[in-house]
Length: 291
Image (cartoon, rainbow, N blue to C red; front, side, top):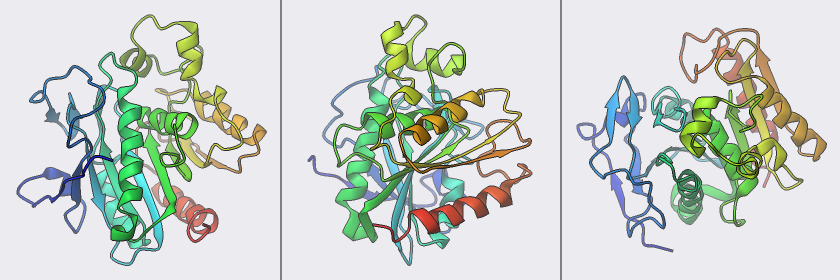
């Protein structure tokens, strides 16, 4: 494995610290160069209204728990495969998850920009990094999960169904209002276009319609969404949950009456206390200390 360079971000150096009491450890995903390229120039990255675009250099921001319980979660923010909502679907959750003893990480992954393999390669590398530093961060290598929101949920389910080795397979998955399918009838068209282009083949569409890729080794899932989501059809979650159930994968799904799409950790979501409590209970019951 390539040698990994670690650096601690100082408050004056990164706004990604906002919402977390301690600065994260920032790990360059590919210090010796990535195995693929998304064609985005190195200096093109920008941030506007807490939305990061044109990512060319992926970084994982790790928040080790002060009293780790052995479980780690890697978060994949959403953004339609064109950018990343790094705050309310990312770093804002660090303190809460750390308080549970969970080592938490947020992945600033590269946008596909016409290169469909790029985001998944970054997600797989993030899993390798978490496991290679497990002893350092108080993590059980058999209790490392993936979490994703919206298009980040599609990437999370892609990792959960297309992982290339046990080293990169997540042990569980947590999904916020995920895009799951690339099929015409239920997909989020913008995310599909950003990932696959305007004219993907039927084979490409089915290959990344992750409800079709579930098997008995797909990790257990916790899925949450709003019934009135008018951005990503609820059928994405329903079909994925059904596929998991059919494969014998024990999972949970919570559908809240309202709230729309994209709420993440925002206080404005009326069921925030509900999903936090329900996710916490599920993690304690089904994940923490299980391996």
